[in-house]
Image 1: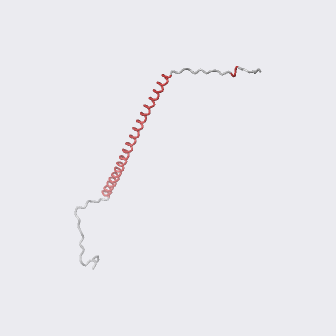
Image 2: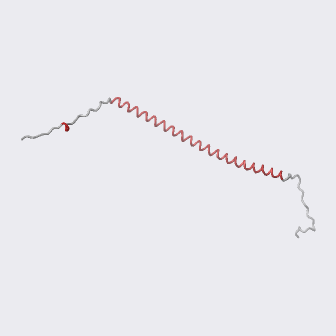
Length: 114
């Protein structure tokens, strides 16, 4: 019994050669990259914390300044009102009272009730 085998150049397995790795260098570079990423992460968390702290302080200062601004606006409105009243009294020739005199009602007057 004879068997016929067909061989073609396309059916042959071609071995693939991978470049040889120096595993020691690979692990050292991996460890260095890992260390750099950890340090970078810690640095970024620190910067984020600083930023949130600054925002909190700025909001606190903004509230204080807003409160002071409202107080100043009210004081300005009061002084502006008093200043305009004083000017108006000068225009109308009003004077400050120095002595108060009361009118005495006599007995036979119409305004007196019995």
